[in-house]
Image (cartoon, rainbow, N blue to C red; front, side, top):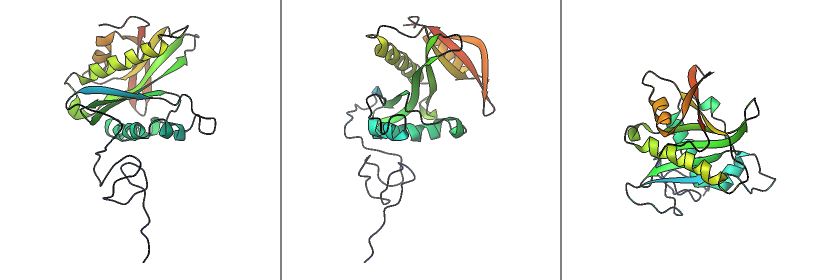
Amino acid sequence: MEAKVAQRCGVCGHDHEQGIKCPICGHTGKSRTYRCFKMAFTAFEFTVQRFDCQGQDEAVAGTVAALERANLALWTFVKILRGRIFPNMAKVLPDDPMSRHLVSFVGDGPMGVARWRPASEENGSQVAIIEHFGIVGPKRRQGYARKFLRAVVEDIEAIYANQPTHPQALVANVPQNDSFAAMKLFQSVGFQPSSQVELVEDSSFLRMRMAWGCRRP
């Protein structure tokens, strides 16, 4: 009798038969439901999980393998949520092992993603850039986006709290649309729009900025 060859799952990306629990992330069947046994959740509670690739050995440093080793379950959630939140921007969402990644949950359900990284502007200013921030449609307009954005900003502040220097400002490229909902969200935390607008894949993004220490309560 020929042994069945496990195929790559189209949901989680790991090799296992359909209907059989993935030995890596706990995914089963064709659904997008996972069991992350190392994460303890309370029903309906908003939480944020974080990971980065600091401390990886040189063999995988700067590669996607570093993200998988850092936290395979969360990295799997990031990839799935990006596809749902940014369906038309797959080409401009490269995997970035140099960033710090955040995933937000309501109960045990993942609902938002974001990442941030330190960077230098053309004038030499040191900033922290928040990128690819978003939450799934069913969880919008319920206050979760503001909670998540505050969590991202607080994470940046916590990382630099015990370091000798910190960024001069936090920067975000915010999508522009007719409702200006994203711009208003970032303004509610303390960001202010600048005159710089970037075009990516036929979409326009407004650059917003908040000086270090100016986060609104």
